[in-house]
Structures are given as structure tokens and as C-alpha cells.
Image (cartoon, rainbow, N blue to C red; front, side, top):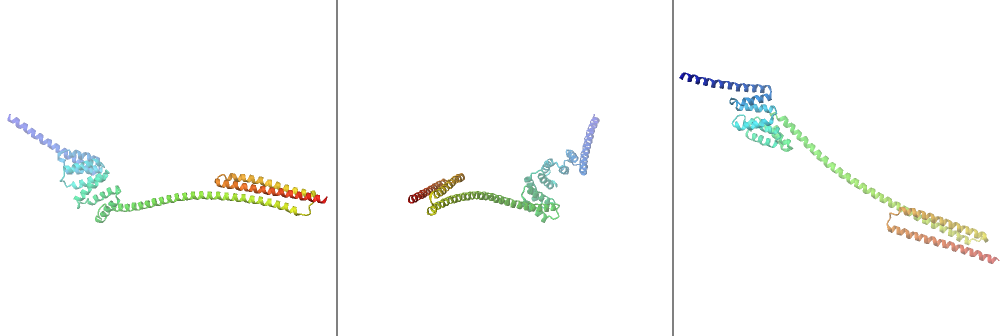
Length: 349
């Protein structure tokens, strides 16, 4: 009986050690396969195998997790890499990989567009690890966050610090490029500002020019209309003067006939009648033409003020009175001439 118990316990011990041996062998195999995939650059396979290896207690250590996070970053699986970084900092706070994991976390936040959070994490890294070899790179990504957020002045100061204080850093060329890029942007912004100002001044000047041009055209039209009306009025006055002068000429002709001595009898009377008739016909023709012209000019002058219309009516009335007086003079002269001829005939008899 005792012999059977001994055999049973021996079997249990052998089973325990054999199971541990096989488990340890599986963990080692998974870890080695993950390392091989990592070295070949097969990032997705490396992530899968290293996660499997980390599930074994033998491989649940900072080395395995650090390699797994690196493989996720190379595979551009930034979200899972960020989560694993936070787990690493929580589980292994005393690991030698903590500064690198903190730097990776800040860079992953930058890649995910979380610029403010990235600045906070990387600034904390720089504060804690001023002598770390990743210090210039951390400064560079802080500046990149500021640059992406359009804070060019703050970013430029950090880029210049990298160039001057860390000339051997691998980020010097990139920082120098950013400095030149910011200078170019500054020049472009100044040019755009000047262009905007010039454009606004041009539009203002153009608007003022068009306004003045409209006013000038309006004044020119009004001036031309006034000159036209003035010229028409002058023509009308000249026509009236011509009529008056022609009437005066006819009157003078009649008076001249009165004083001529070579006239006698019916011949003189007929000549006088003919002259008077011609004068009356010419006067009627002139009056008719004057009325037609006055009507044409009146159509053009309808837009004038009421005062001008009243003035024209007064002038017209005055001209009619003058023409009537001339006609009366002519009739009186004719009657006087006829009376004189009759007196001469009676004396001769």
C-alpha cells in the first residue's frame, strides 16, 4: 500500500515538471518566433506573436512589451500602441524603458492629431530627461505641434534652439527647413496683407472714380441742355429782330415814296398798293413762319420752369403788339398817300 502511494506521488511530481517544461518551451518558442518576425520587419506578425508570448508569465516583462509597442508603431497601429504605452507605464513604472515609452506616447499623440496632449507629455519628458538622447527629438515634435497649430513664432523659437544647441542631432536639418518655411510664410503673409490693402484701395478708388464719372456725365448733360436752350432762345430773339428790321425797312420804303415827286395818278397809286401788298404778304409769311418755329421751340422748352414759360408769353405778347403797331403805321401811311394824291388831282382840275 505504501508502495502504491509512493508511485502515485512520483507520477504527480513527474507530471508537474513535465507540464512546466512543455509550458516553458511553448513560451520560449512564441517569444523567439516574435523576435524573428520583428527582425524580418514583419510587423503585424511580430505584434501577434509577441502578444501571444506576453500571455505567458515567463514573457510578461518590460522587454516583451517594449518590443511589442515598437512593432505596433512600425505597423502604424497608433491607437493600440498608445494604449499599450499607458499600460506599460502603469505596470512597469521602474523600468529602464520608461523614458522611451513616455517619448513614444508623446509622439503617438502627435501622430493621432492630439497636439495639446502631445505637447504636455513631451514637455514632461523634456523636464525629466534633459540629458536623454531623445531630448532634441522631443523638442522637435513639440515645435511640430505648435507649427501645425499655426503658432509659428513659438515653433520658430524651438526650431532655432534645436539648431543652435544640438547641432549634431538628426533633427537639425528638419528644424532648419521649418525655420526657412516659417520665414517664407511670413513673407507670403506680408505680401497677402499688402495685396489685400492694395486691392481695397483700388476698389475704393475705382468706386470713387465711377461716382465722379457719373456726376461729370450728369453735369455735362445738364450743361449741354442749358447751352442748347440758350442757343435756341438766341435764335428766336434774332429771328424776331430780323422781322422787326424787315418791317422797319418796308415802312421806310413807304415814307420814301411819300416824298418822291415823280409820282402821279394811278401809276403811283398802283405802285404804292403793290408795295404795301408786298409788305403785308411778307409780314404774314413771317408771322406764319414765326408761329411754326415758336411751336417747334415750344416743344423743346416744355421741360423748362414755369417762370421761363411766363416770360416767353410776355415776350410773344410784346412782339404781337409791336407787329400790330407796324401794321397800323403802314395803313396810316397808305391812307395819307391816297389823300395826298386826291388833293393833287382836285387842284389840277
